[in-house]
Amino acid sequence: MRQQPEGRLGQCSGMSPGRVFGNAPERVGARTMGVAAEGDDRATLLLGTQRALVGAVGGSLYGACADLQGDLVVLTWYVAPNMPEDEREDLQIAGTEVIADFGSGARLDERFVEVAGRAQPLPAVGEWVFLRRGHTSA
Image 1 (cartoon, rainbow, N blue to C red):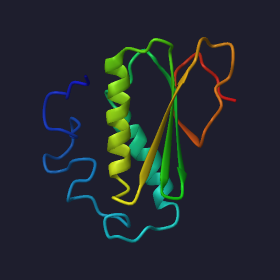
Image 2: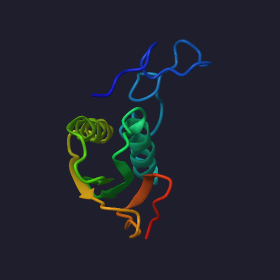
Image 3: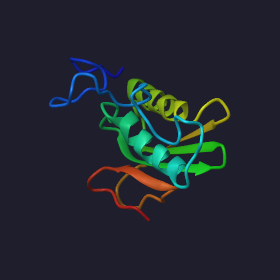
């Protein structure tokens, strides 16, 4: 399972002590006010997925795509065959963190696609949020 870094959750060194990331009350924007600005859902999806992957990327994850289809969030994880269960659980936790950004009406579709090697380019399903060095996208 993913270990939390030492210090305050969501805080990076050099930041003021009161500022945190994620769904903290300090966060101000269209989503927190209940009004989605154009492009806000896309930004929320891409940035939220990358945030959720911090500390969750193990050696078995080759790539990750995120897509928003109405109220359906599609996360495609390109993984090594025989991925360890703890790495899979870390990605499922990341998916839960992403879907939490969209409220109770959103649905999540997580797809674990096993990739045997680096010979074939990985197809993008939505937009890339992570691609390990040595792998290419189609």
